[in-house]
Length: 72
Ligand SMILES: [Fe+2]
Image (cartoon, rainbow, N blue to C red):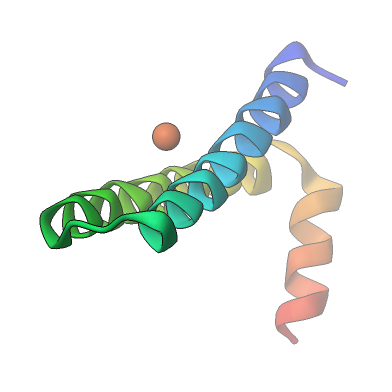
């Protein structure tokens, strides 16, 4: 396995954790502006997830095949 793939998977874990962490803080926030800004950041993290998944699909042909199977 290439170092790039291993690192991309680690990065993906971090981005997914970030989405959950921001969501937890949104749920706890008392101030509307805080909630709004954190929601914006959370959605940027979701964009990062999508960017990393795109790269994984490009570089890992088995992963790409599995996505295609699931997508029908
Ligand atoms: Fe990120």
